[in-house]
Picture 1 (cartoon, rainbow, N blue to C red):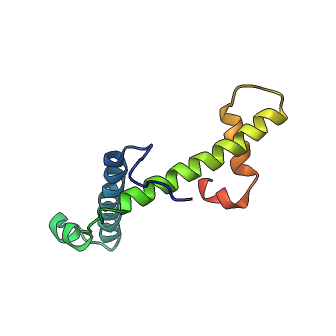
Picture 2: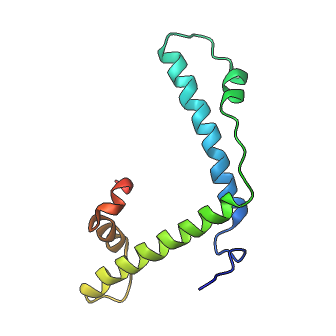
Length: 109
């Protein structure tokens, strides 16, 4: 079973933008850490250069595919919960129940 990884459901530009946002989050965490250590002046350039990272071309493709698989799995589990309750409309509570039924999804809590 070989799938074409170039065909993506999720927009790769958005995935890459989210991945790049991690850089900003890391910078802010480092600034907060420096402030807690008593530094009154936080030089943004020093922090920016210390957390700069590159994203390989295939990384957004792989992450996008992983997200698709996660969404598919959660949707199937939520749909099973919907059917057990004899409904035809998947609701937020079904997704919540699907997450709660497995320890694999504890990171969502």
